[in-house]
Image (cartoon, rainbow, N blue to C red; front, side):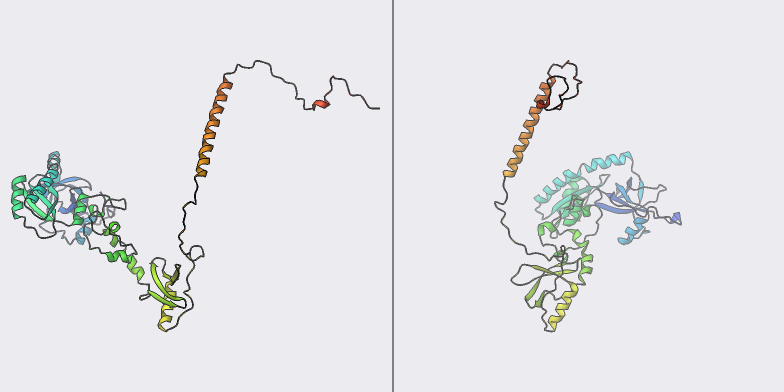
Length: 390
């Protein structure tokens, strides 16, 4: 359940005006449709229900209820009161769930068999997924093909092979990734398999506006196409780029022609480099516009007027440093020897403690005499008082 109903606590003035249409998802959310609730029961999100199908019934999970459904209906241009909208039959029973489980177990074998049949007929297509209805009367074959495919003979073979009503539906690479599912490079579940329903075209221009390197392996998703998330922040970048001046790739100063190498969009900085130097000079947008205006008047300023960043220092020139032989393993050897000495010292100390514990106890009475701190040469042999000198 990857959709949060943020309108669930919305108070309604007229309870009878509540939305009677619910959104039902099938096949782990890869397909979602709207159904009208004509029963007197109130269904909650996550419940299994039986709905009208093609000459039978199907079983799905309720994914949206309430006022949030009306927003989705408006987004997809679906009339809430359309008479041809399918209905919810009942809450799914144990028999309905057993039939659903049995028919879902047939889908993987149907995929393998259908691919073999299409290969025998030499059709340029790939069967991506087979979805069998809960009652087993209808099967939808999702396939990928670059060109138009004549599958009239294929449908006859499928109908006789699987004993179902066959529906062929062509999908793209993005829809296939949504049905298969997976984890993206961001570490989250794929957008196309959770909430993304409409797929917009994505090109490399979106990556260039966001200053991303044009690396096909990094910009491609699980489907092999460009990632849909490249369009998420594109509008923000386009709004920020409107402040940058146009035709400012080169600036004329007294030291030569400065070339634009990159733009820091959110810091409003433009980085230039001068000839015969690898230093990069960041300039504010106003300064670039000022130099550009002077150049149009055939005036060459003395310097670029770069701003100071990184703690008040301009960006230093990157130099190649040879680090071969700069480090020695002697420090590691000394540390290993020190650890070994400490271990051996602790071992000898434990042995001494064990040997001292095995000594017989000393039963002699304690000596309570005060210590004699006098020097040996000043001690008297007896207790006679000292004689006075005459």
